[in-house]
Figure 1 (cartoon, protein in one colour):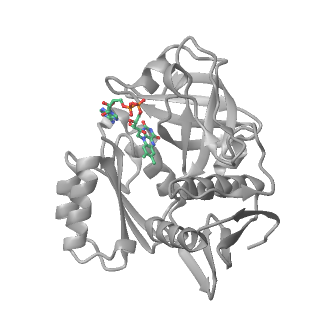
Figure 2 (cartoon, rainbow, N blue to C red):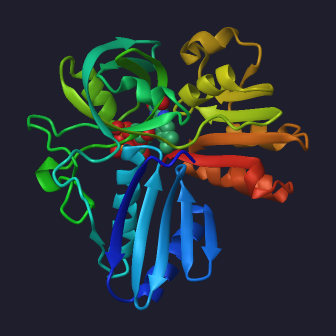
Length: 321
Ligand SMILES: Cc1cc2nc3c(=O)[nH]c(=O)nc-3n(C[C@H](O)[C@H](O)[C@H](O)COP(=O)(O)OP(=O)(O)OC[C@H]3O[C@@H](n4cnc5c(N)ncnc54)[C@H](O)[C@@H]3O)c2cc1C
């Protein structure tokens, strides 16, 4: 790791409990933990949170290749400790700054991509950072008729979110295309969707927040089998373009909404994703990626585990519930 940014803090008492909390978090997030005597380090986002026990107190050092990641880690460590009633005093906190992974962008256009999809183009200086690695972001939409209040860093290093009437709508979407100062994403329109209603309301010129990027990229497997519904089609479209090896996609999407994927020979239209998964051959070397309704994702997980897939050989995620 090219360590360029660093910050320190101290937990004055209950050092042992702080170390246990860090171990617990590493297990929960399924990320590496380095242990060396009275020091442990959690390794995540190409960064490190190192806890060194000194008597009953703990010296905390955060190291990261990017300031944004360093501040995100500072937020997470503070939140983790707060959850255990432990306080940390940081050497430096950017009090009042916008939340670490937040960029503010302006809506440039909303167009109909197909009967079921709207394409939104956002503009902002930070757009290009959403082009790397992870495919997804969280869009923050302010309550209608109110000036949005954005999440900011508090004096203790944690991000404070607006609540009550100022609470933001914050669903997750997939970046479809980026360029210098712009980004596009596709919204699948469905009943009762605040995001679809917002996009339909001609929000040109409005400011929205984008948090991320996050949520992983295209699995680097020799053979990739992708399964998804309309909400997962943007991610599958990105993976079809990025996959390094053999790839096939099963989509539960009506033909009129397949857009450019309608003519892609690697794409198969199906009526039921779980049935398609149950019937298809899954060679030993393949990685299965599955996303859709939470019940379908759960059924996919059960099916793949029953077939002997290891937990790292497949991805089965809920995109909506
Ligand atoms: C990593 C990730 C990436 C995603 N990328 C995209 C993307 O690029 N494009 C996209 O359109 N979606 C995407 N989704 C799904 C999207 O986040 C959800 O559909 C989300 O619910 C949309 O928010 P909402 O404004 O509809 O509000 P919510 O409050 O979340 O939902 C409102 C109501 O709509 C229902 N609902 C949600 N989705 C659907 C649906 N598909 N069909 C019918 N009812 C539904 C909910 O059950 C709820 O009752 C992604 C999800 C994840 C986790």
